[in-house]
Length: 448
Image (cartoon, rainbow, N blue to C red; front, side, top):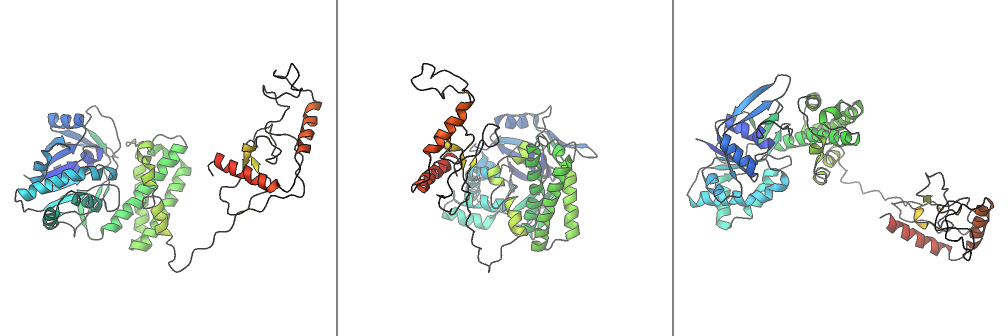
C-alpha cells in the first residue's frame, strides 16, 4: 500500500492535502504536535470533510493514522513512504526539517532506492525550496549526495479556503468545493505520481504568483478593511460595496501586472478574479477576518501578497536614476497637539509653556532658521492658560494664603497674565538656538 506522511493535522492538512491523498489511495500518516488531535485520529481512524457550497456534501476519510511529529519513530515511517507533504506554515518549516532529514538518513541506512518526493504545501513562493535548504543543513556530505539522487523537492501552489469551523467532532473539517494544487513537474524524482486533483505544471512560478497575488491579495485586503469597519467574517466584509470596490480594483491591478509578466489571457484572468470574489461571498464559509489577517509582518513584507504585486504591476526602469528627494520645509509656527480642543489656540513654542505641544513635520531634511523678525505674535490663549481652573496655577501671589487653592481667577487676570508673559519673550540672537532645542525635544517625544 502506498504511504504518505502529512506534516500538520490542522484544517488544511485534514481538509485539503490529507483528504486528496487518501482519496488517491494513499494511507496518510498525520504528524503533528497536538496530542489531542493525534489521539482522536488514532482512536476514530476516520473523520468527515463537509463540503459547503451551493450543493453541500460530505466525504468520509478513513485510511489514516497519526503520530507525534517529535517522535523518533517518525523516521521509520518516512523510510517506508513514497510522499511527504506539509501544511504547517512557512515559519514552522525549519522546525520539521530535522525530522525529515532523520527520515532521509533512515532510508539511506536501510538501502531504500525508491524515490521520495517532499512537497511543502504552504502559502508562499518556493516554499519547498526553503524546506530543502533547511533539511540539507541536518545532513552530512554523504547523506546530501544520496538525497540529491533519490529525493525530490518539487515546489507547488495550493488554493482552497478551509475556515476554522467548530464541529461536534473536533477533527471534522469544513471546506469549499473549489481547490487547486499545482506541483512542479520537473522537480519530481522518478515518475510523477497520478493523484486526482494534483496538476503537474511546467511553469509553476506563474501559478504560484497568480494564486498568491490574486486570491491571497484580495483575501488580505478584505480582512484588513473588514476589521477596520468592524466586520467579523470575510463574507460580511466583501458584502460591503465600498470594500468590494477596493478589493476588486486591487486584484485587477495585480492581474494586469501578472498578464504582462506571464502572458495570461486577460479576460480569462479577470474571470478568475470574479470567481475568487464569488468564493469570498460564500455564506457557508464563516472565515474569520482575524485568521485571514494574522501574521501581518510576513504578509506585509516586500515579497508577499500586498507589496510584491505593486512591484510586479509597476516595475522600476533599470536605466532611470532615482529622482532626488525635495527638501521639506517646516512652518515657522508649529501646530499644537491640542489644537482641536476648544480651550487651546496655537501659539509659538516659547510663548506656550506646554512646549511638548509643538509638532514638526516627520519628514524634514532642512528648515530655514527661526525668524527673528517680525516678532512673535502675542497669544490669546495657551495650552496651560492661567484662566483654566487648576490646582497648580493661581494668579494670586505665592505669599497669599490662597495660593494652593483651586480658584477661578477674575476676568481681568487672564489678559494681565498673558501680557506679562509675552513681555518676557522677546526675539533675540539666541531665538534660533531655543527653537532648535524645542524641535529636538518634540522629535524625541513623538518618536519622529
